[in-house]
Length: 114
Image (tube, one colour):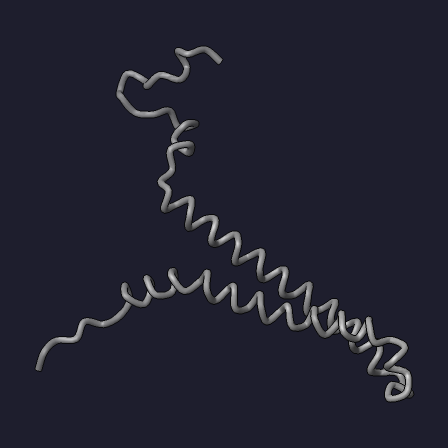
């Protein structure tokens, strides 16, 4: 790529291909936050699903009350994975709060004095 291709066109505007490079930091921050929230949804589904599968595979056997000491590690790992889902829910709430509070301020009705 030559240096001439990087200069502004005669109208003084940036070419369309480089306009994306000059996004505002607020836009990049919003996109990062949105992607993190989406990733946390996937992490929550995955951790709870695997944890529930581990725990239910042990609790559905008929002699669970006598056999649980032999499978204690599997039971604890499954329970911790299910609790990790709670941490992902809290992280989603923390990340989503700035967006929701901005939307609440924008959508509230103005209260006129009596």
